[in-house]
View 1 (cartoon, rainbow, N blue to C red):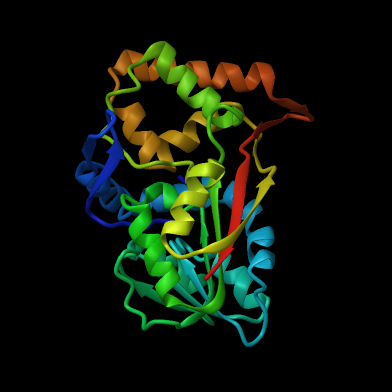
View 2: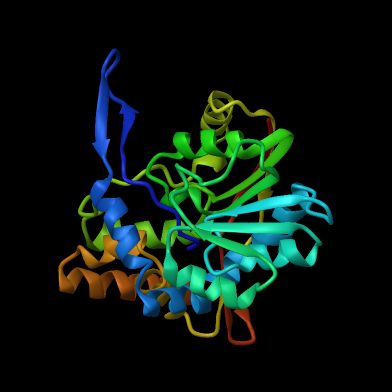
Length: 295
């Protein structure tokens, strides 16, 4: 969700019964991502409604990878260029990669000093050892094969290079996801959306360490970040996930019309009741995790 967008069309494998593997086909999810992030209206909604919370992760992310003059940095799943802009302002030489032409059009206008490339995150069009650092700001939840992308990041990093990767925290600790999935579970069917890859890879530290090590990374360091949505209208929460996302929007859109209305009303009611911050503002925490690791 953030939505910076990245895509590859693959089938992933997850563990099933002992001694067996269950193959999950993510083609429908991948196609929906590509279609959704080609829509100008959805991209504009993301920039207006969702980006303000993902922006809150950028300063610690850019600082963690040591962005500075003389550093070549890849902004993977760069979206509309919000992280690229910060990296350029710190003096880095920045290349952004995304699969969405609609996002890239906005990035090129926003950050003319960066170079932007339309490409697949699992098959980057860069030579080995190209970058001093790679950042990906809440992009991995949109990648059907995170392991393949981690291997590509390791390949394009120079020896001693650093990756900085963020993801939203899991529902057990995230009020945002508790509101969203609680409403869907109560009033709809959470199984209707197509199978999708792990959305919280880097906040699940044991899984993250395993995946990073398999791709050749060492010395992972984890930092939790306290981000939050701010709304002047509690109904804004439902609007974010209906109009400024693809993955959550798929889940909501797959419900019966009466269930969709009930889900929207339940989310609005919960925000209004429990997350008032005073002065006509509602604050809904949306915590994230930043991991850095080296090759």
